[in-house]
Image (cartoon, rainbow, N blue to C red; front, side, top):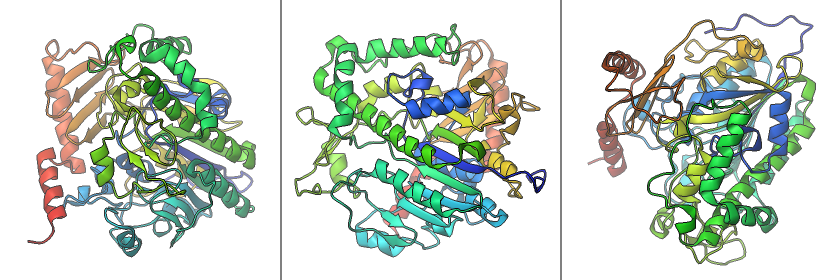
Length: 531
C-alpha cells in the first residue's frame, strides 16, 4: 500500500498523537457508558468521533505489533507473546522487514517519540543484568532501534507503577527514581518534554500507558471517591447501568441483550469480602482516572487545531487472578517497596490494594463489568476480548460528537497515519485508512476480519461472526442482531459455518497461524534450550 502522495506544500501535515490504554474494557470510560471519571477522554469524544465496532488483537503485545505495523500479529512476528516458539510468525519480536509507523513517518520529516510501554521487543525473562545485556540485540529491539527518535518508558508488559521493571531512556537504563515517582504521571511529563523539542516539524507521539493493567497501584486520593460507589452498587447493578448508558448513547443496539453475569461469579450480595472487592475495583478505576489526568496534561501541551489524537485500548478487561505463587515467580515483581517494606504479592483479601507494597489484580468478576455488555475477556476473541473503545479527534476534519459503526481493526492505524502524513506506506499493509470514516463516509467494500490468539479463532464477514474458544467448536452469531453473542446459530446455518471456516483456514495459512499445540511445543523447546 502506498499513500496517494504528499499533500500540497501549503497544507500543514498534522501532528499525530496515538494513545493506548492497557487492559481496559469496552465500557470503563465515561463516554463509553462507564462510571469512571474520565473528563479528558470524554472531551476527545465530544470533539471527535467514537468508533463503536473497533477491534484489537486480544492481548497486549499482539495488538501492539498489529497497531505499529498495519499487519496481523503473526505477519509482524508476534503471533503469541514475546517468548519465541521457534517460528518466524511466533518469534516474539517485531520482524526487521515489517516497518513500524515511526519508521514510515520519520523519513518523511516527522519527529517520532514514544513515552511509555513497548512490549514488542522479545523476551526479558530473568534478572536485571540479563535485561541490560539483551536490550538492543536483534532479538530484543528497542524503540530507538525501530524508528523512534526518542523513547522513555518500559520494555516489558507490566510492572510496579512505583518502581517499574525495565525502565529505559533511549538506550540507557534508569536505575534511580525519585521518591514520589508514579509511572502514569511520568509518561505525560516526558511526552510533554518531547513535544517541546519538536519545533516546527510535525511529530508522531505514541503514548503507551500501562494503566489500568495489573498490579492495582493508585494513590489513596484517587481511590477514595470510588470505594462507596462500588461497595453500594456491586457488579450486577453496574453491568446493567453501563448497558443502559451504552444504549442511550447509541453505542449499542437496544435489541442486543446484556450478556449474563459470568457463571463463575456469584451475585454481588452473595460475594465474599465485598468491601475488599470494592476496594479492588476502586483502585482499578483510580488507575483509569490517573491516566485520564495524565492525558489531559498532554492535551494542554499540543496544538489542538493541527493535531490528530487517537485513543484506544489494547484488549478487553483482564480476568487474570494474581496468586501469591504466580507473583513470586514473576521477575518484574519487586521484592521490596521503595521504602523497604516487603511486597505482598497476590490477591489477598486482608490486604488493601493500591500501595507500593502490594501486587494485585481486580479479577474476573470486575472484568465482567469492564467488558459489559459483552462476553469473555482479554485472551479470547469473543467480543469481550477484542472490542475496544476507539476515539479520533481532528478539528476541522472530524465532525464533533459523531459515531461510526463501521467494523475496524487496530491494523488500520498504520494506513491512516501514513496517509495523513503524506508518507510512502510499506509494501505490505493489511489495514485500510480510516480517513473516509473521518469524513462520515464508509469503506468502499466489505472485508473479512480474522483473528487468532492461543488457539482462539474468529472471522467476521458482514453480519456474521464465526468464533471459537480453544479447544471448542465453532459458534456462529448474527452480529447485526446479536453482538453480545447470546444465540449460537451454527446448527441453523451450517452452510455459513462451512464457508466462513474455510475462509478462516485460508487466512490462517496465508499469515502463518500455527496449531496452538505446535506453538506450545515450540515454546517449551525454546525455553529448554539446546539439547
